[in-house]
Length: 143
Image (cartoon, rainbow, N blue to C red):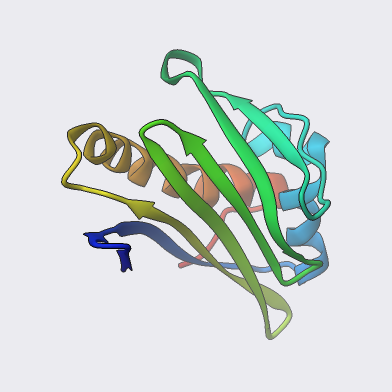
């Protein structure tokens, strides 16, 4: 991906959950469910809603809901300088379950701080989505 004149990179994941899109969507957008698999926040599934995530030693990440299509798409901004990225979850019904495509996009790997964040978040996102979200849904995800 190219953003302006710089090349950017994304963390991606493709997971299958043996649950319908409505249930996966609920786990992505309900604050009580988010606390279980992700972290506590004042997130609301409302277009334009701004919220913050306390990332501990990594500071505060400012977010805004950029796109929202219930049971299909959630995109948020993810800003924690020097990182200015987007996170997208796209849900697609597949049989009796849901295929979830995840993308955290916009990392400039030429910047050493963004490279470290990209490397650290790559495994972090995958474990949160694959194991923790899968557990909240009632069973781990299948690739």
